[in-house]
Image 1 (cartoon, helix red, strand yellow):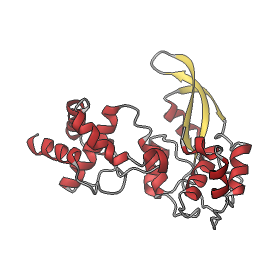
Image 2 (cartoon, helix red, strand yellow; image 1 turned 90 degrees about the vertical axis):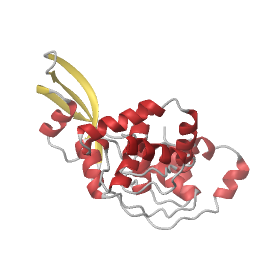
Image 3 (cartoon, one colour; image 1 turned 180 degrees about the vertical axis):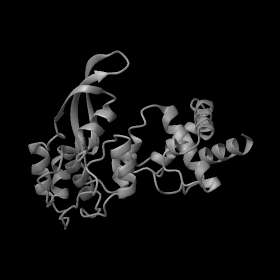
Length: 253
């Protein structure tokens, strides 16, 4: 999933020899809020029938919190099924790069650490912001790897926005918040009227070629470096055409 990088990791011999010279220092540190995967079976209130689903939730969540996040009521069964473990190939390559892989690291955590090493970022980075993880993991049920820093946290959140309309609405919210001084990190924090404006903008421009091309310039490094200029806590620094279109839209609406 993450990382087309991994498709390149085990390829050409000359690249592997070059990468073996990388010797990153420092052990990664886990975030303060950590998620886990659960399988939940319970009664769905809409039909009164039993259903089973898998969800992401805080690893310290109570049964009541997990049940609420799944949208079920009693009777219920909850099983902690955990996150995907690293592959032997990943672990071998990480060792080759000199990475100290924590025993609790998931497959995605190791992908993150390998990516940092290959792009010459420090393996040991600051934790992702706790106040944002509180929202993402505890309230929204968004999967964020344990050892993701702020940059990777942004990436993992943005890939949960599955449709173009969702992504463009989120971008519109960032522009709107920046221009009005609102401290919004997520669309649900805005008023209902504001949210409708964000989605109205997305619907208007989702098929506009010039907007889409400009918007994609904010994500040019996302696939290779797990990086986007559209972040949860920061401003949109480059005011490209997409930014101007959003600003003008809100000035007129």
